[in-house]
Amino acid sequence: MRFSNIFISLATAAGLVPITVASNPEVPDGTYSITHQEDGSYLWKSLTNATMEPITTFPQRNGKPKTYSAKFQKRRTDCWGQDLDHAGVDKSANDLRRWARQPGGFNWAATYAASSVGSVVNFVFVYYCITTPHTSGNIDENDVNYALAQMDAKCPLYRASWFGWDGSSELIGKASVNAEICTGPF
Image 1 (cartoon, rainbow, N blue to C red):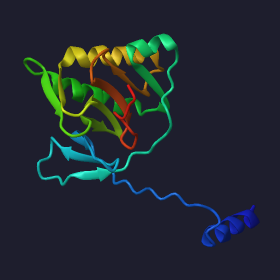
Image 2: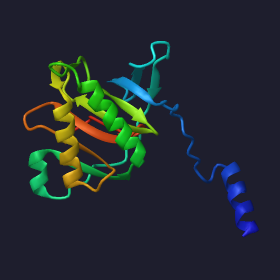
Image 3: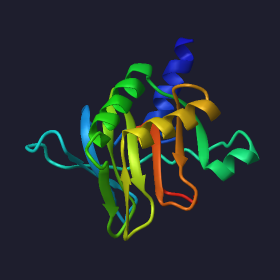
């Protein structure tokens, strides 16, 4: 066993074994607007802490989402294989509900790229996204509840997933903060 540890150390030092270094900064708990940049990065701007500098992250591309049945594609619900922190999902979902709980709901727009808004708790991001540039949408608490119920009905509980409305560029999802979101095709 000791020999294998020495071998791995030597191979790593010689450049024979690739090393993965996490380059993404941590995104603290809070509510954010996320702008999807042309280079694939996300620019996170805090909506709860005006003094916080924007954070740039580069999402991990974990492959295509898994749809559990062809009939669910019509409903635009997709599930990923990643399990999420239970408390993070519950608290982030409640934060998104509170954010959308305004008279008339909340309007959101995408300018030159997809745009999201949502809450981060325990590195879980529950979000509302406009996927098409130069479009806008509106959500309220009922929309959040409906989308989360659709995800939970089609995917295992606390699994990264998203739900979109037919004919709309709007979707609601839940994922880890380092996941690629709102990139389509939808």
